[in-house]
Amino acid sequence: MSRFVEVPHRMLPGETLDALLETFVTRQGYDTTDTGEGMTGWVTELKRQLERSELLVVHDLQTETTEIMTLAQWRAFGRDLADDEEEG
Image (cartoon, rainbow, N blue to C red):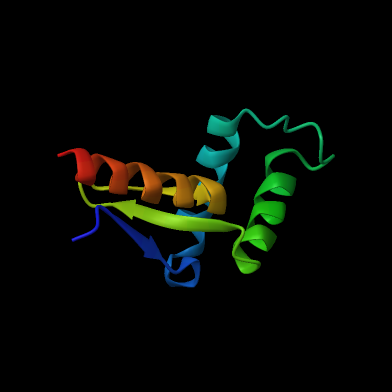
């Protein structure tokens, strides 16, 4: 069984999705003055990226946390986990 499960972003309540996106913005260190709309501008942009499948909502079954990942992060986690399983 895989540790990570992709969660369709449309299944999340709006407030939950916004909170996840705001956490992603903060964690990634985005400058909220860049958009002219602050955090709201970034959340709007990230929702567009979710629609284009450039970002994913991912649930970690091991830690029971849900977060946003870039497609590159998702792929890197997949490779890292595969490497860990091969070594283990």
